[in-house]
Length: 138
Length: 200
Image (cartoon, rainbow over all chains, first blue to last red; front, side, top):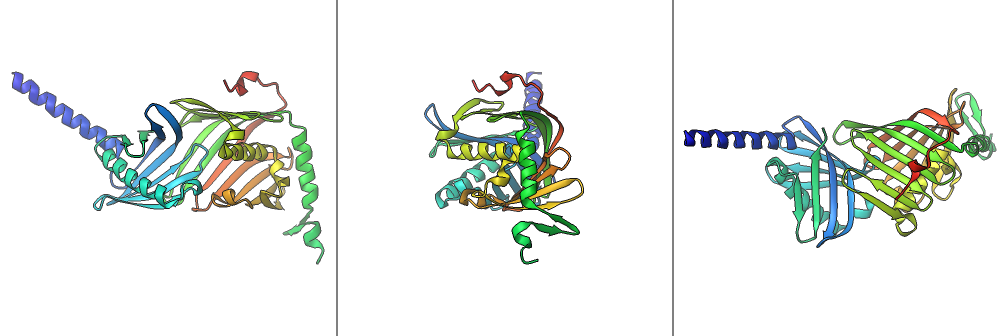
């Protein structure tokens, strides 16, 4: 009886985690909208943040993403290749369009996209103290 | 005809005098003590071939108070009161001194000048051309400052001839995205609660 309950419990946890993963990352041909929050923090001190909206659209092995602030001004346009696990930046707003920032963004977006596929909506870049958070818009 | 560019533009069969229109808009703007309206913001994303519609409310009080509040599909409030800006989202409230933050000083200046139409006379920031229809004056603003040039191709403002005030704003970005903001149910010169502009 106990092993039966354990099996059901495990089955439910796998099913719910798969369901959660599906709702945090777009299926082929689908789009998902998120509120986006990016914060730069060293220890407990907040150095700055950006908030806005992120839209991801999946087309086969490619995910097209756009991040813009609440007023509609684009911060980033990018594509993520699922097979190659590679991010390509298309648009970066002028104040962030520096080679060293682009390098960090590419790496962090790759981690964020990989995590989203597993239902993880937050990515912390421990080296540069940046936290990225995407919450699906209901 | 050679003198035409100096005095105005010819649009279709309608010859317009840009100085006269600017004067009319500024005259109407100077009569606005308070303004409140609903707005609908539609962001068109070229790369994703998608759009996001946001809705909210705007309140303005002459000469340096503005509340821009999104109510759906996300909650976000931007309040400008003199040299202070309050940013409020679901996670936090932040008060910023615009004199110590160049980006917010620019955002605050553009938002305020766009609502009031004052950007038409800001020759340092924009090169402006005006056209007209039977119901509207349409101002096309080409950014002249480096920081603005990097983001926007142009900004188009639609003014109601009847009211002499902005009814639509189009922000055309360098990446081909476009944001259309429509101002609706506008009320002018009604008393506004001071709490709307509180930044504490």
